[in-house]
Image (tube, rainbow, N blue to C red; front, side, top):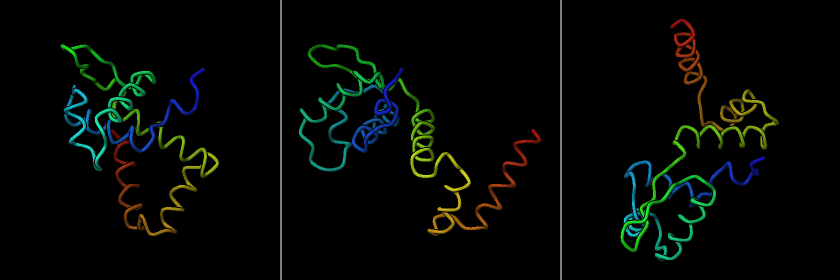
Length: 125
């Protein structure tokens, strides 16, 4: 069984994955300048190797460097992170998540009404 910490991405892992999703297959040297902060080459290399061990990326040797390619789609990573958040913070209740977003003014009742209409249309197609 996959351990829980392998399903969701840490903030730095997510930032690296976002570079790979946007840029495509990349080397450490191509990922490093696209990250926020002043991370050392070896730090980025270590994190890409962690992602490789977690089976979130695959790598192919190219000369002395590796090219890393995402194996997990952005959609799958989003789904996993949302599932984890809803499970841990809201006892598995997506309704509780939405109400927390309303209560903290991160989504309005008007936004929810628009989303409800979109969901109705999806159900009819």
